[in-house]
Length: 396
Image (cartoon, rainbow, N blue to C red; front, side, top):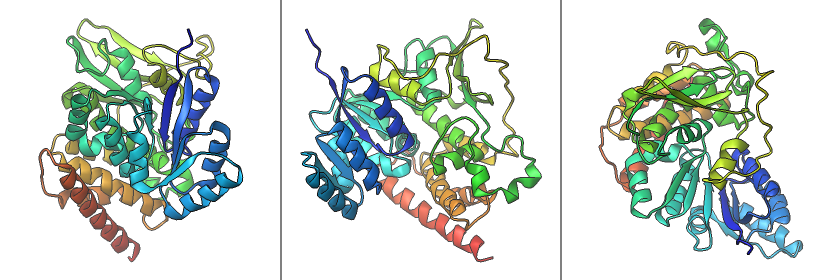
């Protein structure tokens, strides 16, 4: 008897995670069918994806781009229905015929649709770490109340999920600590004295992964690891003092779990996001990802070193935020998004990113257990303050 194919919705299908997800689906056509795709403004790429996968829905966040896509699909005779904006994203994320939602929209823009998927009890593959950073308590509560299945797609959290005996259901008895590995980014060996002059191209040149510009800069500052620290707290219900960040330049070990009996379990694999994506799609089974297995005979050495917080002050800021009321993590994320955008537009220097984030955190009021309205307000205010800091620094 043939099993019905799972219906997959990809939020952010034109980004690196979305493209990798489509590649895994392409390799497993008997198991998965694309139900909906979405993009921000990349009409050409989404049009091409619709022609190949013929989803029931396509969502453009930009209204004008949605009209353009509608015309293109009509000319091709395709029946894909085009939706627009935040409402469109939430519609496909919560649609009754969707089985699995890949949440791959970068930044705070992905929060509302990720929550919609969780609130509809979907299997949610979470690649958008900002959702948990901004709304950890609310998000995990929504998942629990609606019997959603939350599977982490960040390579580090997916590795931890695989190494924990009870997956993501909680901090397991007998676990001593979770070890998050980090590449150290493209500036790991750059002298601290030279960081002030780092260019956009230098900061975006990740040594192992091909990623979008914002995420690449987050890797260079290691803010990505700070956000992952906060994400791990919520995903695995883990005390912060039980999470350790370790630099592992080769990124062969994606993370580890240390147990009280002296054992350390590690998940290893080539640095390719198709690995955690395939795991999330198939869990608890396994499917072809398109990634070759490691050749242990030619792998070479594995190096580990502690995090230098002088080089990576964003890590210390995230550590402070995760131990403070939840509003601090919201401010941290919002200010970072604005500061990184300012750096990418060459309005501020690389070393000013953590300075702006810290300044905004210092201006943010402490709010415990924020509601969705609180989250939106804190996020908006933090962005406004961060823009002011960027403008002041740019005018000097």
